[in-house]
Length: 89
Image 1 (tube, rainbow, N blue to C red):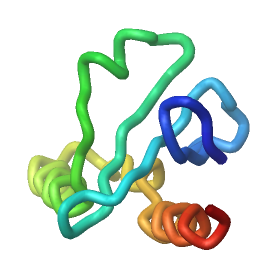
Image 2: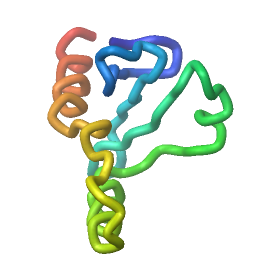
Image 3: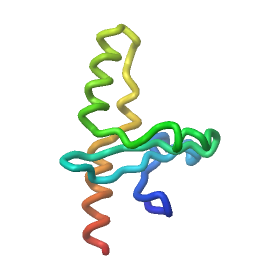
Image 4: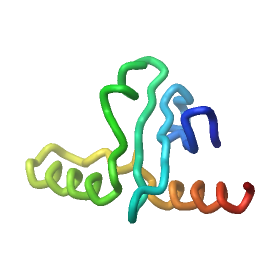
């Protein structure tokens, strides 16, 4: 899907108020979350590269903080959205 902020998918299917935006970075995919219930989130948190997300997940596990929230960052969906956006321009 796409709106004025860019390409996005809903990482939690039951909650359409949360969107994960994706874009192509210099050599990787970048993610940025938007939440209708927390408008400041968009301004407070910038774009995050996929390798940084993976690294944070490793730290999360090492610290014993349980399962990292990787399910929100779906690299395959992101790649498909980016690919499809190029095909349909």
